Image (cartoon, rainbow, N blue to C red; front, side, top):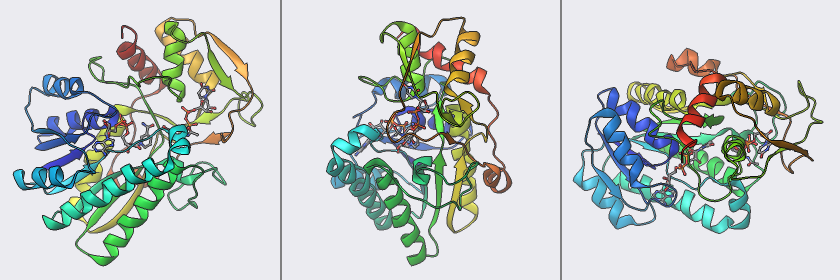
Length: 330
Ligand code: NAD
Ligand code: UD1
């Protein structure tokens, strides 16, 4: 059985669908600090399958112990964590406690129960401002905010564990920019408050919940001056976890993979594609660069293709259509 932490979250819920559709048995855990039980119900509806779900916090060791003693867990896919960069700058201690202590508690429970496999949600943020693109997994790592640091520290903890215990196996998945939603419109990302990322902000601008989208900088050395990123459909990303799981079920040790498409798109390219595909106007205004942003970030995803037999299949048109399909009536 696979324990999915953060199972009701954006990427976790889509991954639960992939796992259940592949015939895997899962148990979900989430404290619902950034998600709701609706996502769990949607996963069950979409797959026609039931699974145990615990409303539990990784910081609560007793609840964790209960999850591990009540279920025959052999692997963990670990999504649970806080992920807002700006909030992490304002509340660093809270980010370190939730993300790092939460992971340490989880690893302790795994050790008590002899569970030695983990797929971990890392992020392209560990590359900081990259020296070159496309980014390979062996590029230098550096972080520019506490959120990114939690990812890098956790990667380090997992590396140490794999050295200490040669029967441990870990896949560190460095996601690029996940967008899109399940085709059904039942699962997707619906952030609370004012979002920071481009796609949710663009959707809010189109819906009139925000006056206009602010385009942060048109003077980058890119195709049209706006920032370039590697947007990946959340369903492709979710599928990647199944491939990573198969890898660590076969081999011991620590394995690092970029999950991206390998293609970079600019802010204007995303706006234009969104307008064309969804037949809507995107109101926007050009603003100065956002501090801390870099010109161009995109993956070299070839290692995942070679070693995991995984590659992204959905393009920017699907990402824009599915994001809008999920959010337009919310
Ligand atoms: P999300 O916020 O939708 O999901 C994370 C889930 O973890 C939430 O449902 C939240 O309630 C839960 N959670 C947080 N702290 C918890 C705790 N202490 N105990 C139990 N549950 C807890 O975010 P997401 O986009 O699905 O991201 C999943 C993972 O992927 C995160 O670790 C995130 O840092 C990482 N990641 C996300 C992105 C992205 O852009 N979405 C990019 C790179 C990496
Ligand atoms: C952000 C996070 C990063 C995280 C990634 C994926 C920061 C500093 N970094 O990166 O840690 O891994 O999301 O979740 O927050 N843009 C606009 N207008 C907007 C919003 C964004 O023009 O209103 C531009 C940005 O300048 C950038 C691009 O859109 O060029 C993408 O921005 P965003 O979605 O925030 O992602 P990242 O900057 O890649």
